[in-house]
Image (cartoon, rainbow, N blue to C red; front, top):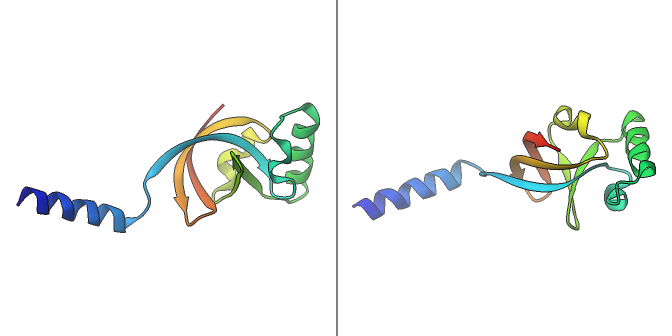
Length: 101
């Protein structure tokens, strides 16, 4: 009975949605994506210019570029290496709960 209850809880949690996870990467912009992983002064200036011009911020982790569902969460971290805690939505979007530099 305990195994069935545990299995039922797992299925309920899994079907309720994604779990929070932690990733380390770079906050860049949607136009340049992974081009700014070196984090030079020019990289940071380009991210600032592109986002000021209307480009959305993105999160780059490894070779993957993720859209950021809640853009306001990263505005103070544009062009920086960060560790985020959040929830993956689909294959390419993350909802960020916490950001640390």
